[in-house]
Image (cartoon, rainbow, N blue to C red; front, side):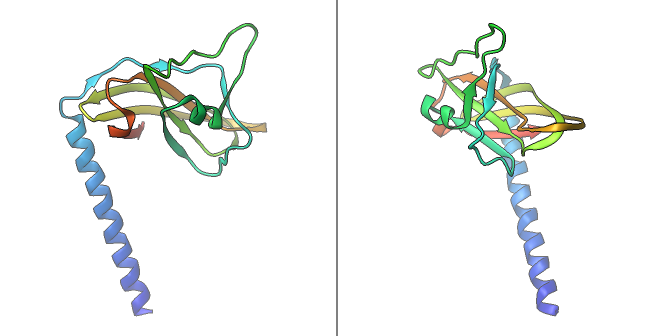
Length: 156
């Protein structure tokens, strides 16, 4: 029993240290970060073969990778938002599948050299008779290679 409490204490300490490091990195990224323009992607859906049992935060660099997660949803003549993969990349947040009306809304993006800070909000509503995979996705200009970026996701 004593070993269990020691292991539990050690695990808690490790988790706290990881959070402190992330917070420190985020504070560093926020220094000198400036708001940047982005395009919210509309008229897409999350494919039904994507495992949506847990939250996913994605940085997508190619059409092939994007198509593995999303499909176009033409709605009454409205076309899906175009993505120019030569000049843009995508940041997305997918929440677990739910039967509650849920909206994920981008609030803003700040960028500093090597860092992107993406703020979003989740609004949960009433229970529904169907399930859905709530998500939001935005396109950003490629001022840096997306592999060289550290992306911070902040839920407000």
